[in-house]
Length: 617
Image 1 (cartoon, rainbow, N blue to C red):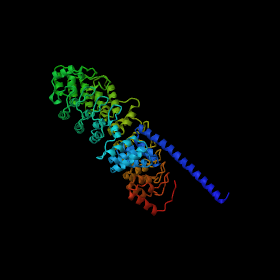
Image 2 (tube, one colour):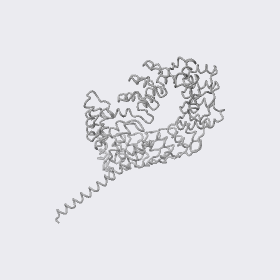
Image 3 (cartoon, rainbow, N blue to C red):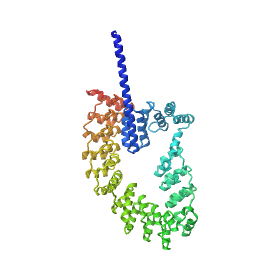
Image 4 (cartoon, rainbow, N blue to C red):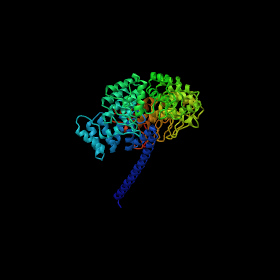
């Protein structure tokens, strides 16, 4: 064989080896991406959204289009934090350019509505067309709508479907937005085709939900959209009845102006119905069958009528068919003045352990803290007082009604077995620091962890509970204990974006170079999030400036990919190496967005002005 033939064979074998190597890399990368996606979905099921974001970010940086798409969904929906349409659009674009149909459709939607990008009808149609070519049905429908409607972006079939989807309790997104008082979301859902008269499992409409939470602006929006104010729930109540029951005179007047009527034939609270009217109502309306006039008056919060009925000898111990006393009915509606009046008139306190029948448990469940205080004073002579207070405290911890929980603890409420530890973990993220301190005084293990390995310090750091973090540090909480994802309190505080807590933990001596299961240090997480203030706090104490995560990304590469000029500037000034490559052989300059020329110029200048040692991996 001649030299030329040998050279040809060598070249053929070289190409074969390169092909095998490339296939191995792609196969390993695919398996890794699948494992990461499974881990991320598991974290989402546990509602550990920061862990899911971190896992998906690393997989996305390693080239997984599906991971980029899933991460974009989290940012777009605000799952586990604030919505970030700009980051979502960037991630959708990354996945869409890889040919991922779902991402192409979602990117089209972003362009159609101007979410995170400038609204661009042509770009929207281009991406819808790309997704539709792969058989994406919703993209085809959106494309057809845009082509047919020249006036502006319509509500897509998918948007209408999403707006009408209900949870296990039958609540649609419109119910939830109405209850939260989110007028903008209510308006957007109505424009997207949400059913304004949808009824949940209890027959409650979004209009009723707004009345139940005293959301006047939402109520006005729904009434303007012609929501039916006379629909009855499963108890026969209209929105007006609910307003009357809550003594919400202003809302009642608004409903009446829009033609609302009472399904239970109630008179307005301000009119103070007579005992005879209430007696007639109990006899003629199925909803109030078995109720006494006193029960109806207490439920409605009519203090003057309650006083008159008590003076006339109305029974305070009578129960309705559901077993509720007049006192429980008043407590459930939050009528503190009526509760105090009934107690003064000698109302008998129930020993029932059922929250629906026991006034103390009913007030605790709804977090009427001042009423809980009134009832605690009245309950002290009751034989089962300690057990009732313990039951109320368990209920308060379970429902996170912290103001009531603190009052119950001060009254001697106790939690048996591991209840105090569970209470500490539940309270750490959001409870008043006084409640956390009271729990710690019960000599429980401050470093006990939940099923995900998170301690009270981690949970408080993640949620931004600064006062609680400082308390736990002062009580000796372990600073560097890590959860199942190897995240310390410091890393969790960085993920949450809580700069004051980051500084407090650093000052207390927390280790700054610990890495998560994906290889990210606190500095990397801060750089990836574009948090220049947190990066500034970490740089003076970070030893591993050029450390790499599992995708081979350094903090500089992560900051460059995000296009964060302030973070890139700080890292380069500290001496970060701009020539280091990740597993995809990309340097910081390779991943910096073309839309950020300032960032690209900084990195290029740093490369040109220093004698860096070039590294492949």
